[in-house]
Every structure is written in structure tokens, then in C-alpha cells.
Length: 365
Ligand code: F6P
Image (cartoon, rainbow, N blue to C red; front, side, top):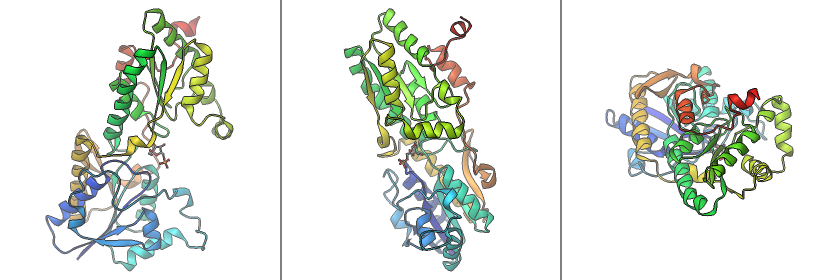
């Protein structure tokens, strides 16, 4: 008997169900003696032994369904070794559940935090296979994560819709895009949506440079400006602060998010009306786009192959459009940022997109 535990952890995204379906289809096409234990709400289910028995039938008809049939929750890695309110040692509890159910392996779908815990469980001797999910695409060791392309589609659609109203009103529009500490979604949606200015956490911005771009556009008769702003975008002044100082500043900040701070500054520096759009969790909602359906099915099938071969301790990654098993210990704890010198940024600059930096000429003045 092959006994597989499965869980989805961290923020949800599109194609979680599609990926689990891929794993189950892959395994059940080769073996009939399979038991699937679906843990409820991520690691919480594994800690407290909250699971349901599933069959291949439960994974039918879910290819296009958003969210996760298992539910999910955030269980911070830094608290994993901290006992819960009843004094339960979470790591020991997870090991206990795994051994009590005589599992052969755990299939864990998650992003960065999830991978740190998955690696911890591997170090503790459990058989683990992970799949790379997150709209942020910030997992180290894979070119792509599922959820990312779907989120880019939604953020792009938002920018597209803003475009027509922006032109009618001669306003400045800020669209704040999710992505946590990285700017992959914003960069792609910004280019796809034709944003004039893209602000990323990886390239600290200069508010005067932003005002200049808006003014220049006005001077040549382009009365509107669209900014795609990553939720983690940071000014060059704030980027110089120590981590602790920045955190304290953020805690005291009067604005709900970066878009509001920018809007106030832009309004003060230009004579433009500024409007803000925050698509927020819509970027994680709804059906996965076709790319994500294919991608998640592929990594799911590859995970099935690894499990059938009893090769554990890997994340299934996509590198150069090939599914690859990457050792979990190499993935855990590393973030994949946008490289400010990558060709995509260079090409975007060639297209005239500003990243809120002072131009070389201006810096010299
Ligand atoms: O990591 C995915 C993500 O959607 C980030 O882009 C965002 O910063 C965060 O999750 C939001 O988290 P929550 O759903 O817990 O508010």
C-alpha cells in the first residue's frame, strides 16, 4: 500500500487543485493500492491530525477550480519550534501524525515559508516532495511557480481597464500589485498593460524622477500616466534605512499601503489628480489560466514519478521549460528577486518605461 499525505500551505493561488489532481492522476495511473490523506488547512491539519481520506474521484473535475479543496493557512516557520497554547511541540506533533498514519510520503504545495518547514520535516527524517506555488514567483530554484501567470493576467486586466478611464480624465492612476517583497508580478503586468512607470522593491524609486516623467508626458500632450506599483515598492530614502528602522517606520505609517503614500506625494509635486486601484486578493482568485493548468499538471505528474520511484527530498521545479527535481535543502530559505540588470528590465527601459530612477544625466547635474 502506498500512503500519501497531502497539504496546501500559505496563501492560496490558482492551480493548487490542478497540481494535486496531476499528482493523484499520475500515481493512480500506475498503482491501485493507494491511500490519500488530505490534511486540512495546511500544516495545521498535520499538527493536529485533522485529515480526510480521499480517492481519485475527489480530484476529478477540479482542474479549473480556484482555491484549494484542502483549505490552507499560514503557519509561520519561525513559530514551528514554539509550542502552541496547549504546550504542543508542533514539529513533534507533525512527525507523530506522519508515523501514526504510516505515511510513505508527504506532498506539500507551498511558497517560501512552506518550503522552510518542508525542509525541516525532511531533516527530521520524513519523506517529502514539494510543488512550487505562489503568485509571487519568488521561489528560488525554479523559473516559474504556478499561480504567477494567472495573477499576471488579472493584474494586467486591471491595468487595461484603468487605461480607458485614465485617458478620458487626464489623471494619474496608480495600480498596486501584489508580490510581497518581490516585483515579478508587477514587472510583467506593468509591461503587458503598458504602464508608463513601474515601481519594484528591487529598484528603489525617486519621487522627483516620477514627477518628472509625469510632467514630461504632459509636456508632449500625454495627459495621463499609469503607474504599476508593487506592494513592496520602496523609496530610495527608505531603502537606506536599517531593517529595524524601516519596520518601525512602516508600523507608524499613516497610509494603508504604498500606493496611498505615493498618491499624496505625486499630488503634491504635480498638478494632477491621482487615483488608486488595489486589485488585492482578486489576483489570487478564480480559475487558473491555461498556462498554469499545463504547468501545474506537469509538475504534478513529475511529483508522481518521483514518488513512484521513492525519490524524496525534492521540490519539482520548472527550469528552461523542463520539469526538474531540485533538492529541498537548496531551495529552503532563499528568495528569487527580480534582477535589476536582467534583459527584461533593459528592454522595458528601451520601451521608455520608467522605474522611478533618476536618469544618469539628472544624477550628474
Ligand atoms: O504570497 C502571496 C501573497 O498574495 C502576497 O503577494 C501578498 O503579499 C500576501 O500573500 C498576502 O497575504 P494574505 O493573504 O495573508 O493577506
